[in-house]
Image (cartoon, rainbow, N blue to C red; front, side, top):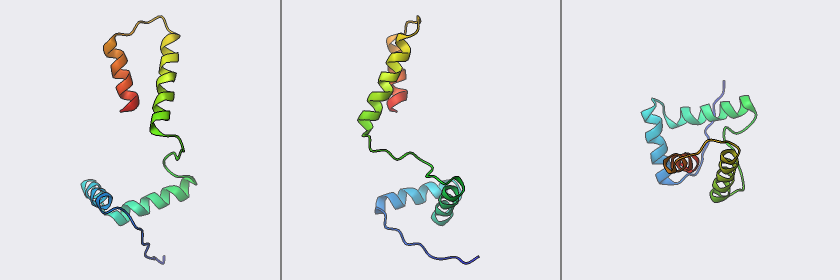
Length: 91
């Protein structure tokens, strides 16, 4: 199998953090990028969602979903339960 070099520009701080992550799980950047490429080719999609929605819009939608679910039950939620749920949504 022929191999080629792939040059990619990334933020220096991002590269450093990514390299630290890779090292912490026992691999190097090259291995991680090759795993990413193989996954994309196997699944024929990116392994994450790309959206034009802002984070605020996404959080708002999730909070509205939670509100709707909570309104369709007879259970009453404590303030702590509601705050924990909100933190899980925006976390």
